[in-house]
Length: 546
Image 1: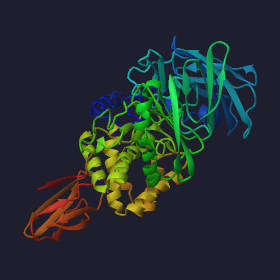
Image 2: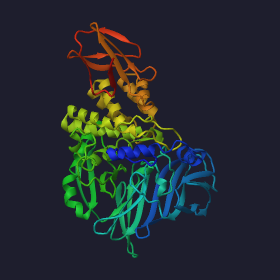
Image 3: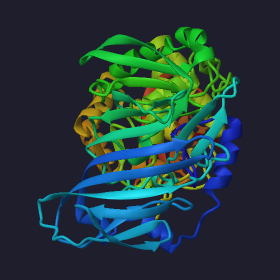
Image 4: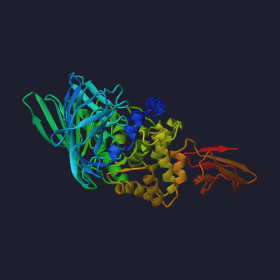
């Protein structure tokens, strides 16, 4: 969840909205570094990620990190230079392959490794990248990304990472582009023995050392995007349950600060409720092998895969506020629902380029509405999603510029959710709509995708040419407006403020009789008795009587 030059992973409330819009508009020109970060360079495209072993030591007192990342890859075509990313002030100290030191040329945050051995197509190779330093500290996590170095109320270190948009290379060296997810990963984190580290996947082992430190080894058996990798360090206690899901028993683990155990055991009952609703709408939880975790963090929250972070103060709504002003937003914990929704849209289905971040945020913002629908009914869900429209700015398109690591407008949250809600009305068959949502997660299971793939799939499954629809809502800022005139027992109507070929049918009530009309850019006329026209408010449009 996230949105801005340093993107995060969730839709926030009203204060968040103005803040995020300001940040989103700050950058309109792009640099050489933006291209190196955001494009599939020749030094990236020749190798396919297969495995990481991130093996690090974190020193809370010095706020430092040191260690190495073993990067295993399959050679797709012969090449001798590899790009690995790591952001200053962290430094790569050494790179080796098969015990031999390799030359590294540094270009800002991109580092180019010259390989000595022949890279044969189809061969599996690995390099060890050693690094150290004091990583960037998040000034307002998770918005600006980096490490959060906090303390709990007992003055015990409480530490976490958050880095979407800014990139995982802010704290560990990796192939920092979304198009290529690693197939599996081992995360080994060494911390003082009075602390516990929680990361993604399942805890494989714990090692206690004579120097007064402890290492936890977490294994992720599913593909994972770089920004989804996290460390969470604190005085954690653990409890768990088993959820009987669509694919069988699913472990659900919870890690919270020691003093919050009683509150969490009551409040986190929301998590299995979330799982039930989202498996209904989206299909089976995508990471049964790695389990589901909810981990308390010193910031609001983030969708780290199988290690969802939580900091909503054990309150319903967004820190106790209803982002929809409808009342329904206080019926659930916003962060548990939204950030967990990203397990399907962001972690299961992941964008190739951050320009397409709407695939994460629009669907996940819409998931809040579907959660309300599942437990409180369709009318309540409509009130919720219509209620968040007040936060839409229509300042710039939802899709951003490609190949420069830049997302589009923060409207990908509220406007994106209302776009999908409108699409549900247009399809006019709730079971077909649910089948499309579940089909997306099955068809693109554990894949990185483009907007075109998502658009084409929905068009094919719905039987509707949705190209103009998506052009209108994703690539333009205009709100389609129905203009109409009632006179002489006739209704005249047409669309304005639209892109080329936009001709969305519309459900209306004419003199209390529900029916569909089919406006286009050209005026249409139909007989009408009476003078009352009501447009279904579930469509995200504007209406203007002339």
